[in-house]
Length: 228
Image 1 (cartoon, rainbow, N blue to C red):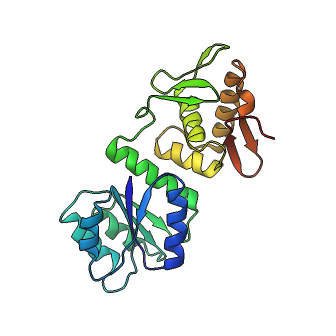
Image 2 (image 1 turned 90 degrees about the horizontal axis):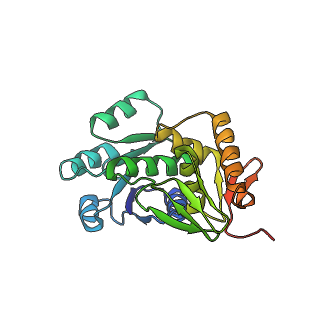
């Protein structure tokens, strides 16, 4: 999916672009803040992220302009902490508001949740995936290999999908919690631990438990093969 990031801070723009690109999003910026709408039309983004403080016109102005032409989801970024900013952004039709400074995992989780909600981009969109020589069926909530087949709860399968989509990369606890929270599944840190432990025990039944690793103080990792 294509994301348009309307942000004039080059350092922050590059950091956000790098993080979102790791999740396979195409991130575009604005080359000329005099022609934001022209560049918006050329990119045709699936989601827009707008900073409030911008050169020429502020983010509220561009939100109004975008909303007059499109229903594309919009997320606001702001270093200002006045509650009227959040109220104004919602009144203009924004989908969410993120306060600076923010944790990148929170931003990514909000982007994912918004895209799922708007485009029905959910765990069932890609129904079958192969991981560690096993077949993972997201519609039936099953994982099968030559040893056997297990059925997972929806929460367990949702966590497994988030992990194997980023296989061999650490997914932080904050990213998991925020993604699950926005999906209205659960918000408790302890509940996340319980669900991951239960998922690992279920995977052990078909010899895959060792492929879900806990990285203390960081998060969880789904590996494609045994670690060295």
